[in-house]
Image (cartoon, rainbow, N blue to C red; front, side):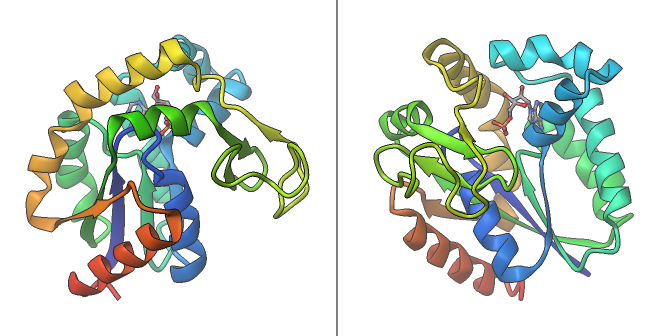
Length: 218
Ligand code: AMP
C-alpha cells in the first residue's frame, strides 16, 4: 500500500510549511489544492474563471471542480512512492468521494494529521505571512522573517502576501472551515493524530513524525 498523509487544519495552521518539511524528509509527492486553484486562476482557464470569485471571497470552491482537479493530479502522479495532501479533502462530500473513488484505486494507506491551533494565533499568522511563489517556502514577518527583505532564502525569488490573507477574507475562510471542514476530524477519527500546532514549526514537525511512526507509516 502507498502511504497518503492528509494534513487537516484551519487556514493558517501551518499545513503548507509542514507539507514542505515532510516532502523533503519523506520524498513523497505533495499537492496543495489551493495551489492547483491559484494556478488555474493565473492561467485564466475556464475552471479558473469559474472559481476565482470563490477564492477572492474566501469561500470553498464547489466540490465537483476541486475533485476534478485533484483526480487529474493524482492520476498524473500515481507513480509516486507516497502522497502528502495539503487542503484536500476539505468537505464531507470530498471525503466520501476520496474514500469511494481514490483510496482503493490507488491502494492508499491513509493517515490524517490534524493541526490544532488557537484562533488568535491563526489570524496573526495569516496577517504576517509571506510566501515564495516559486518554491512555496513560507515565511512570517515576526516569527520567521527572510534574511533579506521580501526575498526567499531558498531560491532568491520575491516573496508575496497571499491575496486572500486580508482581514475580511480571513473571517470568511475561518467560518467556512468551522462549518464545512471541521466535521472531517470526526470522519477520519480512526486514522487521525492530533498535533498541537501552537508550538514552533520544528516541534510540530517532530510531533508529526512521531505520530506517523505510531501509525507505522514509514
Ligand atoms: P489554501 O491555499 O489551502 O488556503 O486554499 C485557498 C483557497 O482555495 C480556499 O480558500 C478555497 O477557496 C480553495 N480551495 C483549496 N482547496 C479546496 C478544497 N479542497 N475544496 C474547496 N476549495 C478549496
